[in-house]
Structure formats: structure tokens, C-alpha cells
Length: 388
Image (cartoon, rainbow, N blue to C red; front, side):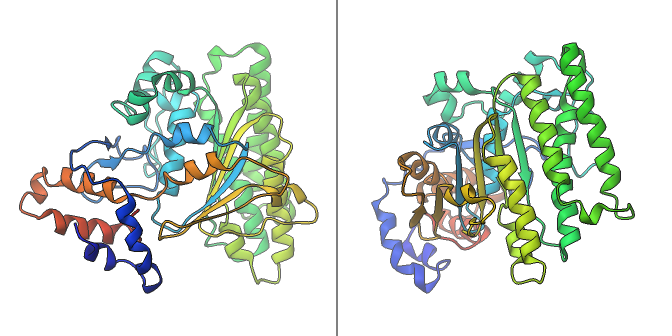
């Protein structure tokens, strides 16, 4: 595997950084760290073009918990596994629900959703465990694995709003995103296992969820001006999640910069910025039930706002395609090692790609292909970014 294979996918500005690849440990072509992928639908937004093999990134679960700050932001170019890594974190930490039962069919591309009425913890845990069998995390850190697997409720939000073209539409979409997260949580709860108080709290969330659904219909009156619908919906979700599980929860936000890319430079930018920053502030700032939170996106967008000053101090790590890193944090904060270690697990090293390529040579589809040819194709499929 030569530098030529890598150079073909690097821009002129990145070519000089290729020499740094040699600083990594020698490539071991044994098929380790290749993790078997679960059935379609388990990792939304990611699908292998060839086989069901993916690179084992489970160690980032431990790295995530070792980040010194409760709320952090990571920015990286497309193709570096941001969404995939968020899914890995969610699958590891998220508390068990009816969605995890073996009989559950929650694939988003199918209209009919089948969710068993009862949560049997042993069966659900066994089903989730299939995602982590023989993983690096389980092999090398069994105590951490046992202590944190399925321990925390996870609220997952994705602000991919590229088709939004006006402020009312953005407000509706923000509310819908939180509404959908609440709906997923409600659908996963086994009501038979709740106390009377917990059932009452859940019913309150369900009532709010149903009324919000009507308000978000395009032909309803007033939904365009209700910029606080999303904040109100999250407040109810926050209360119920903590009440039902009795523990703090984790928030994972994908495409945090999506709204910024939509409203920047528009006549309604100030309105949109205030509405979106208000929602982020409600989720991330002063939230006594928040255990950890991670925002990921492509661009490092300023989070400074006169009404929400604490958002601007969130520690941020930005990754470049050539492996270089930049970071920003408040001068009063300390402790960056955890965030840097976490960021190092994004993207793919030359050794990781070599391991996958070696595994592909064992498949019937690529039995007559050279390792160099497979490596070239993998580079192309991964968006043309440097490895290392």
C-alpha cells in the first residue's frame, strides 16, 4: 500500500501531510478490529456497499466518558464517521427499551412498525449485546463495559434541515425533531413496569406529544409563530426521562450546524439564530439532569449569542482531513486531553483501512482483486479524505 494510493485522493494542500502517515505503527494485516455489522436499520445513515463489515470503533465509548467537560463539540469533514460514531455511542449507553426486543421491527423505511408490548430485560440486553460481541471495548475493558452498558437514557437529535427555506419552516422542523425524539421514547416504554407516579408523568408527556403533533401540521393555525414549541416539548421529555429512569441522561446532537447553514445570510437570520440558540441552551445549559452531551457537525460555527452566553464557551475540537486538529475553549476551563483522545478515534487510520481491505480479499466478490486495488476503491468510497 503506497503513498500513491493516498495521494490520488488528497488535495494539493493536504499532500504535504501525507508524510505524517509513516509515524503510525506498522500495518498489521491480520483481520482484527473488524466488527460485524448488525442488520440494516441498526446504524441509520450508514450502509456498507460490499459486505456487512465495519471498523471497530467501540473504544470511543470509554473515551467519551473520559472527556473532562460535560458538554463538548466536535467538528469534522464529511466521511469521517461522525454519524456512525454517534450511533455507536447510543447503542452502547442507551437504556433498554421495547425497541431492543428481538421481535421489534423499527426500520424507518418500512411503514409498519412492530414493537412488542412487553420489555423483557434479559432478551433485550442479549439483542443489544449482539452489536458488541468480540468488540475491542468488551475484550480490553470488561469492567467499564459492564458498568456502563445500557446504563443511561440517550436522547438523540439530528438537525439536518437542508430543505428548509424560511423561518416558519425552520421552527416547525426544530419542533418536529424534538417531537420525534419524544415519540421514540414513548414507544419504547413498557408501561406495565411503571409506578403510578411514573405512569402519570408519562401520560402528561403523551398528551403534550399528541397536542404538539396537531400544531405541527402545515394547515394548522399558529404553528409558524410558536418558536418555543421545541423548548416546551424538550422540557416535558427531560422531566419524564429522569423520572422513569432515576438517572441522568446523555444527549447526542448530529448536524448541529445544519440550521446555521440554512439561515446564514437570510433576512430571517436573527430570528432563526435566536430560536435555535434558545433550544440548544434549554438542552445543554444549566440542565441538572444532563450527564454528558456531544454536538457534532461539519463546520465550526460561532455559538456566541447575547442572550445565551454560556453556549459560546463549549469546548470545541475541529478535525481536518489531513489529521490536524484545532481546538477552542474558555480561558477559565482546563483539561483537554480527554477531548483530544476522543477526537483521535474519528476518521480511519491507514492500519484500520488495511485490516478491512485484507478482510475483503477473503470474500468471493473480491477473490481476484489485489489488495492495492481494494484499497484504492475504499479510499474513493470514503469521500477522498486522507487516512491517518
